[in-house]
Image (cartoon, rainbow, N blue to C red; front, side, top):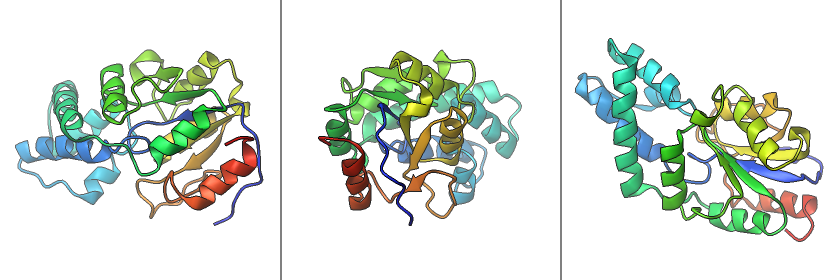
Length: 222
């Protein structure tokens, strides 16, 4: 893997689900429950269609897949099932707590999540990030969710930093495209590593030594 040249960002914006907090397994519990209600299996192929999407878009995809007449009813059930699963089982992703702590000592940080406010706050709290970030932006607080750039543009606005001066961390194709559309450099820690991501760099985890070495070169006192 090619390591990008050293570059000092003015701020860092993180995705949440699947990047900072292991909520994708929690979402999978909720999604599989809905598929089971319709007597259908839920596996990697179905999960791949849903990763990174907003809850409304995910509900629409599920409704199509299971033949439901109302995506809104699916969305309501999905939100409740996901909240229950996150409350029970969400944990920080490998390397996330340490990396965020180190970045936060030297740069302003925000979260830009495709989840609604209720689930963003719950996931961050369960993942030990409840009071870590200066700003957090949820999908129900902007006009368009990812892959539109709105979440990242708003996060940068709240940090008083131009998007071109900020670094994004993502785990999904949807998120990578959103950060790039905002004009940001983006590092991907993929939930689905078999895909090819158009990010500036792709690393195995937030604890990857290559990533930590690159950040050390980019950020003084990291």
